[in-house]
Length: 184
Image 1 (cartoon, rainbow, N blue to C red):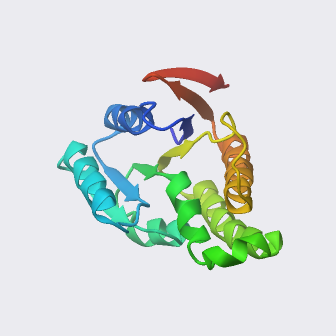
Image 2 (cartoon, helix red, strand yellow):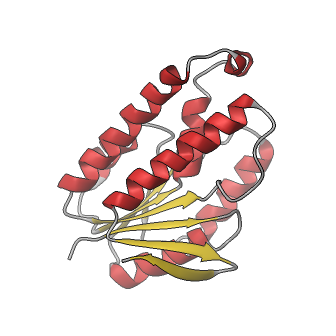
Image 3 (cartoon, rainbow, N blue to C red):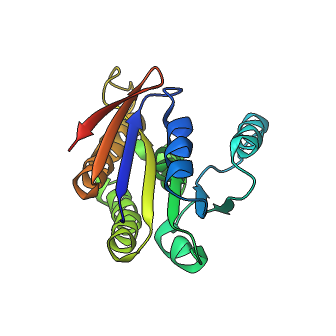
């Protein structure tokens, strides 16, 4: 039976590990969608470590944007799609804009890019026969960012998380490696 599962939590809360555990239990036919962009040596190392933790039989799709359409093209016989993670996906979209412009940019310009991405993903989630496990960070529990770009990022990611949670059949909040069921 098709499911959409959303895993939220802070950094290093165990989201990715739990996503992989769930996917292994659900099927051997898994497509892992990695949204990270290797922008520096540290990120390249992290991506490499992440790859080593995935089961060898899983296929990997690296997509820093346009993931709804990318998954649709690459799904083949996958029964479970793990998207890791929405947090980096939204960060990638922020990268389309000049950092210096964040003090004056119209929120609607960023929102338009994010809505396009999320609408395409939600459309595909609804029509696909496969199950989805989606990883994202809960960024609304910390301090208020000290700059407009940080606040916009937090606000838009919070909005995306709400949309995904509404669509999800199950939602878990990860804390210290422990999944806390939030929905249903």
